[in-house]
Image 1 (cartoon, rainbow, N blue to C red):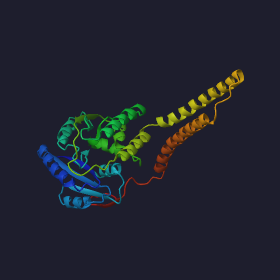
Image 2 (image 1 turned 90 degrees about the vertical axis):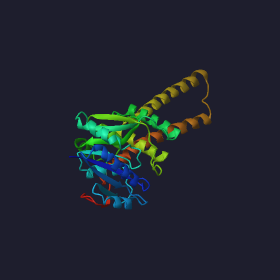
Image 3 (image 1 turned 30 degrees about the vertical axis):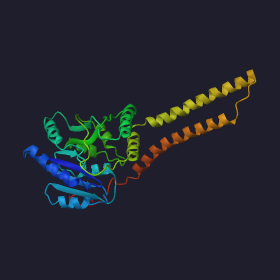
Image 4 (image 1 turned 90 degrees about the horizontal axis):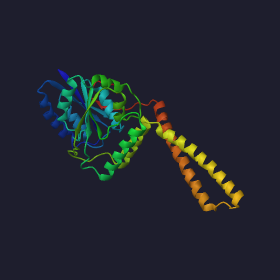
Length: 313
């Protein structure tokens, strides 16, 4: 009998975690007892009653849980769940049911054909999402796919079912600064995409503010593209050329026409502009340097405080 491990990162999900489990029990019936399920809840430093509910659900033989010592982020929670998984296939799902559980059956059937190593999902609509957030999300995907060699599919979710071979490949990338959507694409393997319309949360509120999503997008750009560094270099060359041309023009105009240079307001504006560009370039370099610094320190991706699984704490 094949085994499917479900990795479910949770942060303050007390309103939906039991609803999620009930839905998964309904989904299991679609497999007609031909597949064994393992649900791994990962508590990412929740401050509500999420951990207690995990302990309660773990009384069921198909439920395991891992609880971090603090909030390490969703990326760390996904990585921990993948490390702890033992299934032939492994799926990553959100507890809020925005990832439709019924799609698991279709995903499993596709992988069983042997033609694909992963079945991933993407949203084709953003119904229910703020208009401004949707606009910037579309702009982000256009930008990242132009400046990165790693394809990031527009509307891609973390929700996917993978073979053990692909999971092991993902786990081999032990980088501290993680962006899983890019990592899934970078490791390669054959991926089938399933499209579905956006589904709103079953309960509770999203933990992703606009600012957090913005910072997350910056993480992905730094992780999978060096184009910003090239832009900083190109801007430096362009400004050097522009300044050289302006110097020649000013000298020629003064010598031939006797026209003095303009006053201090224009000079002040230029100085502020050039200073801003320099700070921008330093900021870009600083982002890459900070990520390198964090990687070099070799800190663990997460720390487990409590678990009912046989994993190293």
